[in-house]
Image (cartoon, rainbow, N blue to C red):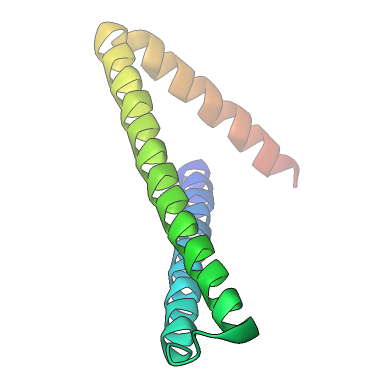
Length: 112
């Protein structure tokens, strides 16, 4: 039971970190959009060129982020389907692997 709690805690922390990173990135994007909107009246000179470059960079970053997020989601689905298929084809091997991993993790935790 302790092993499961440790694994769940580690998975939960990783999920929080990635969620926080995505949230921070979205907040940064929103702030950049607000700054660009605030400079809408300055289309000439240095501010205009910086504003244009920032709009291009922001658009590219949004597209790349969306592509990466979709790609990671697709990869996660493929891995989950593969694991599900393996467990259905080899239920006793899956139980053995899970028990072995639980034993190893328990031994490592016990040493601390």
